[in-house]
Length: 66
Image (cartoon, rainbow, N blue to C red; front, side):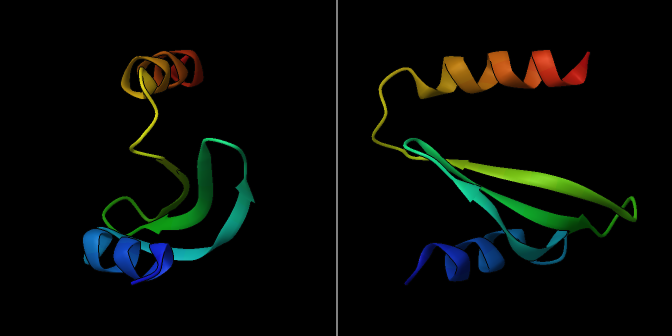
């Protein structure tokens, strides 16, 4: 099953994916619609196999929230 299909299934009822915004060496970012809050959001999918990805992603969240 391709990434987009797996995401559609995992996010069903919460977010509706609209399109892929970009792809890099470690992640893919999608534009999505937050169904609960009626707004556009970015959904970033980080590759599982990356060591330390959780810590880097947490830092990104804190920086983006400021």
